[in-house]
Length: 87
Image (cartoon, rainbow, N blue to C red; front, side, top):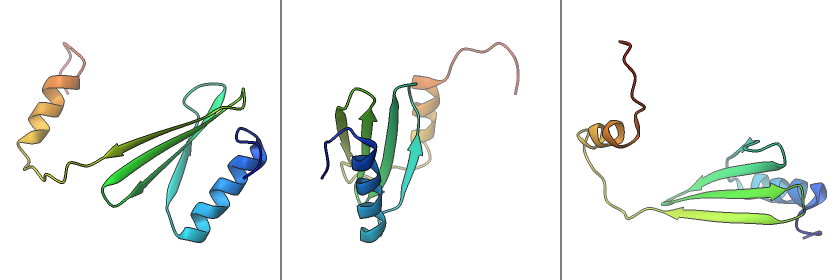
C-alpha cells in the first residue's frame, strides 16, 4: 500500500474493499479525518485516515450471543439523553 495516510492509500483501500465485495460507508467524524466503517460476519471495523498521515484501525468483535428485544431497554437506559419533552 502507498504511504499509509495519503489520499492514494485511502483510494487503494476502498478499491480493495470493492474488489473483495466488502460493503463500507464513509464518514467525517472530525474535520481532519475520513472514517471507513465496514461490517463482516461477527465484526465491525472502523478505519480512520487522519490528515496527519496516521491510520487508526479499531475492530469490534461480536461475542456470538444473540439477545431478545428486552435488550433494547438497556440501550435506552444506558445511553438516552435526559429530555423533559414528550415524543
